[in-house]
Length: 546
Image (cartoon, rainbow, N blue to C red; front, side, top):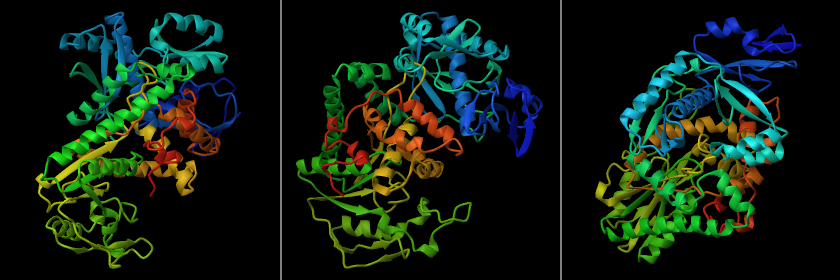
């Protein structure tokens, strides 16, 4: 066979592993190589080459490389827990600032417990033990899973769809992990296990600096929001994919959908009540990352404010861009529309001050074709019973509304903070949930295919990190727009779009990863989604019109 590596053709014998083929290059790499791409699919370094194709190595500075690093770290820590405290069931709850928050059933997490576990983790890493992928027949797997509580999260579909099932083994420890793992435990270097609330944090590096840990930025408001939703769904007994699918199969999902939607309505109502009870609030600022459902949230909030006797008036930050020639440039020399410097903050603040003082303004309309503000005679004045609502990515940043006193502003952060896990060890990424929403919406309402959305996503994420996430704790309140059932609805839209990305595309591995994740969800028909649901913003049929 012939392999193309760095545009060089290499003859290879059938069954040669990637590690054997490029062992010297892997050992000498400046940044640690942890996996590979073969014909645009993510593979282990122990992947046996059995066909011709293109080969790339993946290091820790690659997003997939860091995913594999984190997965390997969780595997090692879960192995250590099972050995030091047999019977204690570790759960990955959610992600916080380059860390994963974990809890353990039947075990009180103390510093002494973590010290004992960490000692074993270090021994496992230093021993550089092989992590092997092993296969079971369907019959063997059925018997195996009956005995193993920790593996029920995503495996019923494996047993229905596949002739064999894979497990990762290290010595006598086994577990099922969603995606490729490192080939040995020695790949993990930088990490920390530290007590946090009723559980602990697994801290890990980021791909920009894979050999050291960044400072942990505590996010108490974000944590409290996640905990709130986690507790509710634990009470409903629907916190894992296994349980969600079981409810769908039993035909009981309608009640859970109504409960999930009621949770949203209750939270929005509480936010509106808080605003109405504080007579100082004159400006409601709403911010959140892409595909958080800001549009529907704002409309539902307006209804609740009206019930409280307030009349909402909206003002768009998008009409306050600077003139095109004054727009800042990014590092590639392109217009950086996501920078706060792209907003005419002086004019915005002057207009806001006038409105809040009861004065009339001549509101601009930004012409995106010409790149200039236009004045079309749109006059605005805020009456005593009216309240101003503004939405934009910079609304968390005090620089956007620097002339407005803090006591007059109520800042809302909205994001889809997923609390549903595939199983105890494999969580569903909040970012992945928003990405699926974006793929569906971009196709439904903007005419973009999945390739376009995936190509733009890294840039979108960078803008979110720079302009939203670092300011999220500045919010007065956080609203979690996730719905426990949403991926079961979105999958029928997203999978066909992702399947259009073929193996020749560099995005194939990402598309395949998302398809694999979505395939484990049972279907829920659109008819089950209420017309006022935030989810309708992405699939259509919303009662709220633009």
